[in-house]
Amino acid sequence: MKVLVLLLVVSWGCWISMVQPQELKAVPIVRFTTEGATRNSYLMFMKDLYTALTDRADKSGEIPILPPQSALPAADAQRYVQVRVSNGVQAIDFILDVSNANMLGYRPGGNGRSYFFSDVPEDALYALFPNTLRERLPFSGNYAALEAVAGVGRSEIDLGIGELSRHIYYLRHMTPLKPSGHGTIAKALIVCIQMISEAVRLRNIQQQILAVANPLVVGTYGLFKPDGLTMEYQSRWEDISTAVQSATFGIFANPVRLASDGQELVLTTVREVVFTIAMMPLRCSSPEANPQLLRLPTASTGLDDSNDICERVLEPTSHIMGQNGMCLDVFESIFDYNTKVNLYPCGQNQTNQLWTLGADNTIRSGGKCLTTNGTSPGSNMIIFGCNRVPSDLNKWEILSDGSIINPTYGLFLTANGEGNLLLEENSYGSKQAFYATNNTTPPVTKLVGYEGKCLHSCDDYVFLKRCKSNVTNQLWTIYPDETIRPQKNQGKCLKYGNLEDNTVNIDACDGMSAERWRFQSNGTILHVGSKMVMDVVTDFGEITVSPYIGAVTEIWFQTLP
Image (cartoon, rainbow, N blue to C red):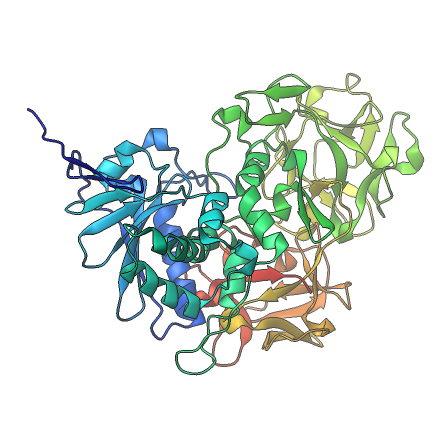
């Protein structure tokens, strides 16, 4: 069958195609309106968009990995998500690529035309926005190109609900056919990309938008400009994704350094970014090079470059932190056989606290292996020659939940609260949570939840309260044993365990399951023991846990003090 193709070349280099082969049957649509928008409505928009984009993602690890373009042909409706944004009068339809959440183009409502960035592949362009005249914009969709056309950088462009509404108006009424409108259109797209694509894949940016998403007065919203660190996250999202997917035991092969305003933020582990990076593009095609679950690698030691993108350090060396932020320690640096291994305050690169996580499933310090001196609960940990004992005594699996298990006996490495390390049955307690890292200082953060309020402590009670600066009751220290502790009293932990009133409170840390929490990439905080997530009783601001249902009361953010 012959297909008639009509091309119209215009002076500024775009082209219009009447061809519509392999048009999509139905692209999933997510909707948002700026009219009457609130923090909650924007948060639900983000949740719905997250759900649509990750519908076919690989969720086997800690952060969903989006499907590659090669897995979804151009005519597959599930390769795209359509986002319809209205300001109450005008509406714009945007198309996002499911493989990376990148914006490909847009369609102003009602004018019969659609516009695509110059770097959008033709097979995708042909399939999208049927029954419209498709036109290429005279610039690509990267920030350098957009900023050059807009004549202004991202750092000087305001973001917020009101700005999104205003730029929807411009995209509806400004035509790319007139070069005089290119700058306005490029600036509008910079706003839309950051408030749609960037916000759904980077939760720190989403939180900044949410902070100004409630109206000040009817129809008036706050503004902010992205700072240097925000733009670094935007520019380095793919690099961070590569680091996560090529990590071994959650440790990056190479640190990711984010430079901003003369300072540098160094990211070295998956745990440092799991509450910020909501989704990732596929960067490591080899299954071996994608160990989000903290499995021991199967290749030989050294550096493995599997596909010119991802490199793995197959036997990383680091501290292993456990209960109360202490480190696995070979007693008094005595590497003789039968020396006890316990927990001790972390030092700086002390040989007896550095452990090599071996490809042979051993955990080694000073050339000798972490070994159990028995096969039953209560057995102690010692350092011993790797080949001097049966291998089932010194083989370990490091799990993604922070547990370290002897797979032969099904027993878990456990701290007894006095610095000793034992083998015990799984109790899901914080005394069985460990973290391989070379950053031994627990981070201090605010936890922002429902309606933008902060988790606030008062004696042993916790509740939501309006966030304020320099309020120590709103500062929380995130320990490597998966406990959340008031910064001003780090001997106490956030706990859920009282089934009578179903509330979360503060009590003395004891290493049990009531105090173990895990931050997840979807914005929830999982209570490990109950498998429920931290939630808010909206009438009183009390903190509880509940089965996850995707409610806005279940979504949390970390922010700098």
